[in-house]
Length: 366
Image 1 (spheres, rainbow, N blue to C red):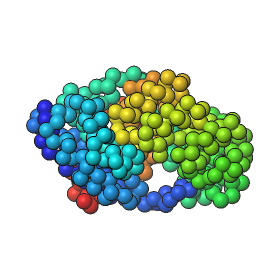
Image 2: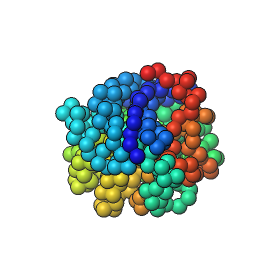
Image 3: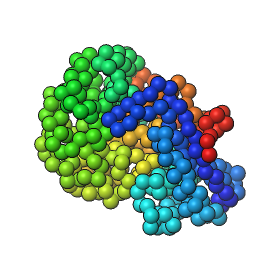
């Protein structure tokens, strides 16, 4: 089997009502990626996601640095191709950020081809190791633009739907207001529901330490991205100052950085994102590394869960899959399926990355 052609795309998809964390207010998502065609008639789709800007930069990387080096290769040699692309044209200007996200889209598309060629869902091709239903947590519970009344209402609605784990945003200028908001949610959901908080890199070490002290009585499953993602030392210091487990990974782009976080005891929950780390190939390496250190993996849903629903079923140290149900009907042909607070196992061949023709017609901007 040989790759005969590849074509990039950017889709800009509205998400309905806007959502806010401590970094930004989001009204739309961009899906930047490519479709890869083969002489066997099998097509693979891969993508990465931005919060409404930057997709054109990723597309430019795909078009000028990656596509020409794909044509003629056997897509079954996916790990060899990953190495060739990583040490290829993009190596001198990238290794993180847009170049890594472009490589992630490419790697995902190649794995999609391999799963379709085998006639299997990706998780089964990779050797599934998890029960049928995937445990999940819901990030839609507590955006910063929600009032305290809205936080209570959303939390109750989600627990009524069967969710047993919720995440809410923190990172306001006054950490005491964060404390009041988290207290309100904890009180309404009780002690039987897991609760996590996410600061989205908002704090320096002093404020993070102060906020952690204020939140320690809330029985939190983790405190996510409290500091700049490149600052391993400060995460290690914060981990020593608080009993709340530290979670991070959505803005960590290399296996080497994850290694340094893990070896420095600076992370307790590894949130490696398949769209940021460079694709499925290095994602599996990070998950195996975390397992060797007896750490749990809870991936960040930068792919809107479509790929992660497969690869978390392959590893023994997966804990919870993040879900962000921000639309009633998503743009994918085989949309992730949620029921009673669980993610149902995908059954269709491939990586669940194919978009509907309607989505391409309606949302494609480039």
